Length: 178
Image 1 (cartoon, rainbow, N blue to C red):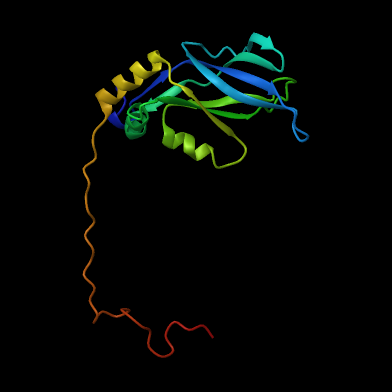
Image 2: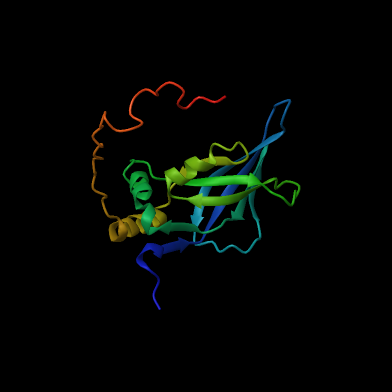
């Protein structure tokens, strides 16, 4: 049995390179940022330390796969034609409170519209990183196969009928609360 056309989606496993940087700030001692997305990394749950320099540590962290859905191709296309395609990485506080790993990748997406929804909560951090060539080719192929331009349809207004009940002002005693 095949999936309905509306359910067409594809996934790509990715890992996220995270950097934990020390701050000279009286309110917080460090900050987390996504600095790169690496295609083809399976989510094993294991973090791998990539390097350490004075004041920062880089980790390769597993992330949920990047998913694309047939109905969201407008967002993917907008990202690709922007001239500087990005992968949006949503970081959330880690519920396990592992020391040195206070944040974790919650989502990696190629849709700027989806990422925008997460940037408003204040709980998550949304970082953008350059889109790797392998992901860009995959997104371009997906958009070429599934994108359908939605025709613009101007909504027609209903003609107002002034003789209709309820049009205009209320009569005496109508709509008042006692």
